Length: 261
Ligand SMILES: Nc1nc2c(c(=O)[nH]1)N[C@H]1C(S)=C(S)[C@@H](COP(=O)(O)O)O[C@H]1N2
Ligand SMILES: [Mo]
Image (cartoon, rainbow, N blue to C red; front, side):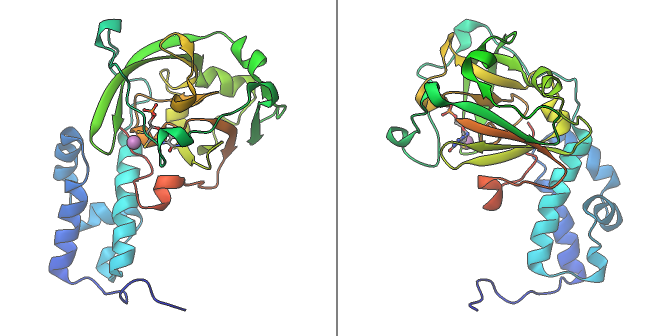
C-alpha cells in the first residue's frame, strides 16, 4: 500500500503548546476565543477534545483532534434560541451568487412530477413526501445572510417550513445526535440536532417569493443562517435522523463539521 502521508510524528512539549495556541486561534469567533483563553491549557484541551496530548499523539492525530476540539467547543457554545440577524427586502443581494462543486450549467434538473422526499432513520413515519404534500405545510420567510467559506456573503429571502415543525411531523427522535442530508447532485452534509431545531432552520421551497430556482437548489434546500454556506444542502432527496456520525462532502476534505457562525 502506498503511504500518502509522512510517518506520524510525536509532538514535543513546545509543539504541544504551539498546538493548543493554534487550536484557539482557529476558533473564528473572537468572543469564543476570549472565553476560552481563560480556561486554555493542555488539560482543558484534553478534556474538550477527548484527546490527551501529554501522552504524545501523532501529527495526523493532532490535526484531527484540533478539528474535533473546534467542533465540540462550537457545539457547547451554540445558543439554541439566539436568532441570526434578519434584514429588510432592500438589503437583498442581486444577483444572488451561485456556488457548488461544479459550474451552474451542471446543476441537477430534478423532475417535480416524480420527486418524493425520502425520510429515514430514527423517525416514526417514513412515507415519502411529494411536493404537493410539502407545499401544503404552513410556511415562514426569512431574509438572512449566507456566508460562504470561500470568502463572500450575500443576503437572500427564503421561504419554507420550519424544520423543527417538519421533524415533529415525521415523528423524528429529537434526542438523536444528527440529521443527515443526501442530495440529487451527490452532495451530502449533516447537522447537530440543536441546530436542526433552531427557529430559523428552514426546509426551503421558495427563493425571492418564487419556486426555488434550479441553480439555488430545486426542489428544496435546508436554510440555516447560523451555519456556513456549505452546511446548507441544496437539491435534497433524503433526510435521515441518526446517532452515527454521517459526515459530509466538504467535511470529508477537512472542513470543520460544526461550522457555526
Ligand atoms: N447539493 C449541494 N448543496 C450545496 C452545495 C453543492 O455543491 N451541492 N454547495 C454548498 C456551498 S459551498 C454553498 S456556498 C451554497 C451555495 O448556495 P447558492 O448557490 O444558493 O448560493 O450551497 C451549498 N450547498
Ligand atoms: Mo460555500
